[in-house]
Length: 324
Image (tube, rainbow, N blue to C red; front, side, top):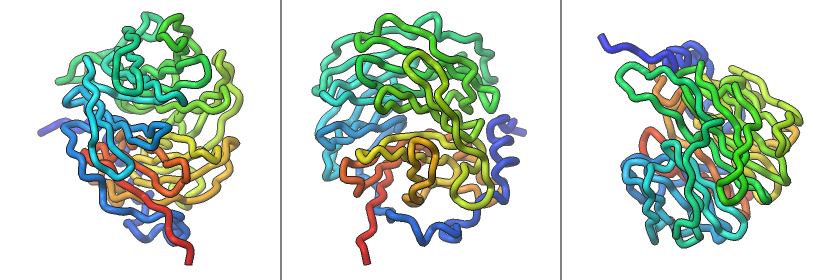
């Protein structure tokens, strides 16, 4: 009999009976966005996404070791080749691309030219017991550029026991400084974003967002697990992924629930954005999305939200509803 991973078992226990069937959530009717057909771009292993200041979408394909450039109209217009499978991407205001994967980091020009590369620093390394049937691995679970700093989260381990470290670099991928460790991010997933010098980290197994300054000082924490309603975070480990809108609202994506919401930076729920058609936990056997990367980003006008469907290798689209 095939062994079920601890992560999936934990997801089933926490999520069973936690989420109503699609379309029956009490807040669904108040969602600000509706789902459109997904983008028609093919991926071998869709792994991350991020919008550029020009409105193009950068989507990582870990299977082909490349970043696909997708126009605002949804068509692939170019490809950036990488020496590693990308696991996380961020883009500076000037268009410079920062990405990481398989223990490596890269700084690229807006047209994909390599400007700097670096290996995972020794201070970010952790002792990892290999999972049965898999090689020992550590993930670049989050990357975010802000001002003169680049912040990277490195994850290690499996299931709810997985931990991450937060490290700060300069913009040339040098001078690494360990800011925090022991962060609880299930299955090496620990997303981060930066705004006005503050790092927002999705500590998903604690069902909260943690705010750090650039020195690693904790400025605050908010969020809680909830099996009902929409204010809290449900399923196994959420919020899984984060992004900022141009209005300063923090968007959260919840794996397993396939739910996108908007919060103030202090944790006040602003709105339910909507749902995408990924697997939801409606019964204990639906555990495939327990700890899935569900990377999210929003256009500058807030009209469209792009959500990565990790399991199905497609980019889903939410569009703002027209006022009635």
